[in-house]
Image (cartoon, rainbow, N blue to C red; front, top):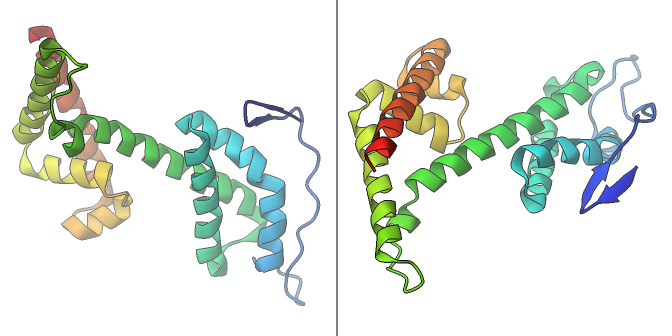
Length: 197
């Protein structure tokens, strides 16, 4: 392993040492010692994966720590035979959620909309920015209510499809379908708006 710019690069990983912790009946469970061993073994590998999703060292480290925190919170349901893939699934899902929220924040940011005019930016840049913000708002408003609710909950709340389905009283598959339809409609409409600008 070697470090390059804060990112750890690894060749072929060494075989993992056995985890500490467990019960006397032969079944293992996630306890503090096992979590510590797991963190020591997987932290750098998980960081490398997450970093390549978010491209921000501090955010990647936060996601790695959140991944292990969530693993600890669900420790009663964790099967030690599948704990490593579970940690990576948690990390990748958190990283993907972060990317989606970051994308939406760029498009829907209220801070940007209320930013005072800067002397360093020209009138043309400010006008183009205001037109883009208006186009996004119009595109969101043009979505059917059910699609808009699903899209905004999916992209801005950080909730899973299952959680959103319980909030809205619709099946998780419908949540996924409506989200995909809404994103497709937004992209089509915004691509048309860019042609006009």
